[in-house]
Every structure is written in C-alpha cells, then in structure tokens.
Length: 193
Image (cartoon, rainbow, N blue to C red; front, side):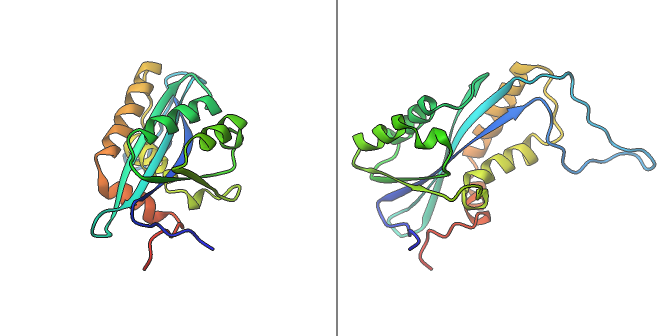
C-alpha cells in the first residue's frame, strides 16, 4: 500500500549529491561554424557534498506546501554522522509527525541512524527501492541547481565552488514553484486526488 500524506504530517524526501569543479554542460551557443567549448580551469577532484531535503505537508486548507533544506560539507564524504546531524537540524524546524523518505544507501541504514529514529517517536521512515531516483523529489533539487543555475559554469577555485553551490541552493529555498516542480517531476504520489 502506498503512503498518502495526512494532515499534521510532514514527508521529508532526503538525498545527497556532490558538486565538483567540472561543469554540468547544458545547451551551449556559439557562432555559426564553430563549436562551443567549456574548459575547466584545472583538474580539481575536491568536492562539496550536499545533503538536502524537500519537505511536503498539507496546510489548514489541505493545500500542499513545500520547503527545501540543505547542508554543505566541503571536502567531506557524507557519513551517517552528517546525516544524523542534518536530520536533527530539520527535526528542530518541523512540527508534528515526520516521515523520512530516502533510498537504501548505507549511510541511511547505519546503526547510528537506527538509534536516532528509536529516540524520537514522531519520526518514521520509508525506504525507497534501490536505484529509483525518479521517486525522490530531492533529485529535482540537484537537477535544477546543477542544470539551470550552475550549468556551464566553471568555478575559478574551490572557494567559488562552495560559494556558487550555497548561492544556488539558497536561491532555490526561496522559490516555492521550483519545490513544487521537484515534487511533481518525481513519480511519487503522496497526495489524495
């Protein structure tokens, strides 16, 4: 049976993604007869790991509402400690029952995460099938940020990569129509028709 969103409950769709110096190429333009090129400033394998979530809940009139949360971790791999800290941060900002929807990555199934869920009665989780990004609206956050906001952009240095990533995701937090697009472009159906 598929879960449906109920009043007083927030579904938190969580995911992680790396941001790197190598630009994501999107549509490119060049003078007729020439081929557009985008060249990275230098080979740099440093990354900014991002943990993000799209929150979905119903307001008093049963209208779906959304909000985006994120945390950046320059030069770090995402660990279960970072995931737990992120969930704790979001838990303090969201009232009522909260259901975490995420994939079966090892950082989500670690003992530390299980103990975190055991501590809080108002937290529950739904684990998505492996390799099904189309079910997680948070994938839309990464798509929008990397393709629309940072597409064809090559940061000059690591500090600029951090700054552009933070700027892109902060801008997205203030664009409700993009949050809704992230939910609607996913194949997730949480709202009663």
